[in-house]
Amino acid sequence: MYKVFRIITFLFLALVLINCTEKKEKSNEKSILKFAVIPKGSTHVHWKRVHLGAEKAAKELGDVEILWQGPQKEDDRQMQIQVLQNFVSRKVDAIIVAPLDDKALIPSVNSAKTRNIPVIIFDSGLASTNYDAYVATDNFEGGRLCALRLADQIGKKGNIIMLKYGEGSESTIKREAGFLEGLKEFPDIKIISGDQYSGATFEKAMQVSQNLLNKFGNPDGIFCSNETSTMGMLRALELAGKAGKIKLVGFDINETLIKGIQNKILHGVAVQNPVQMGYQSVKTAYAIINKKEFKKNVDTGVTIVTAENLNDPKVQSIVYPDKNN
Image 1 (spheres, rainbow, N blue to C red):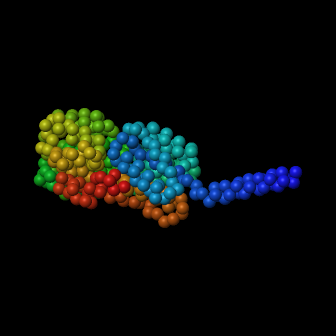
Image 2: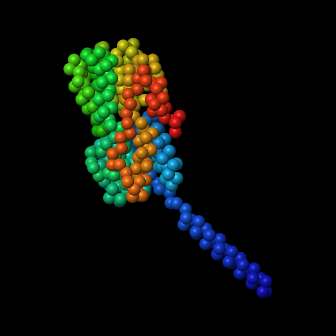
Image 3: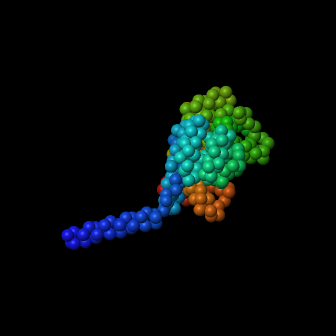
């Protein structure tokens, strides 16, 4: 009987010791921070590279999980609002969002701030100051550089078309404004069309581009303010047999546009650094949560890529960030 008692006592003490050890180990574990990252869309290369940068930062930090979700198309404002509100309801640790519309997302962002959730705006601005930090390209400067490139390509005189992207998109609105500012240096350049929108899809952008080419014939140059508008116009020029003859300058990069540059039918693109956008946004949110110093505004840079500099190592690192991350 005494031996049985000793065995039971030993087993009891062992269980207590195991339980205490487990509790101590759990108490020493870092809690995982959940950062919601909400892009404008999910199909463009640009957003996939933002995701790459966000995951890179999370891996370095070690205690951050990226919750990546956004609308499929870049014109689905209601879906982006629903995604944002859902993350607010879930009380994630931080929200990192690229607003599809600079005004439509304000109430949802305000709701997040009311619940003390840090909000980082990236890629495209918000018509409000009720957020913690802004991480983006200097889109105005990018547009201005595009104007200088296009002017150089057409001999600083002639007729040009500016194809806009969409209403409410702060990033492309700034690019278009920067482009117009850059053209002020060239009084012999005339904009013959500057009020048409490409829309969010390649198919829509190509249709609008074809209509413009049918209406205006042979302009000397064309500027497009985002990836889909540039792709749509490039394809329309190819179908019309005018690719390379009409100078085209656009914004953003993908394999199709790289080939256009190599074949000298696309004469320049302003390229952002979406990997840095994702990376710096996550790092900034982490600094805010841990009450460390952070920059309120982070400029992630813009580069004009042309056939002349495409093979430059620095340009290659921006054009093919997947190989370097």
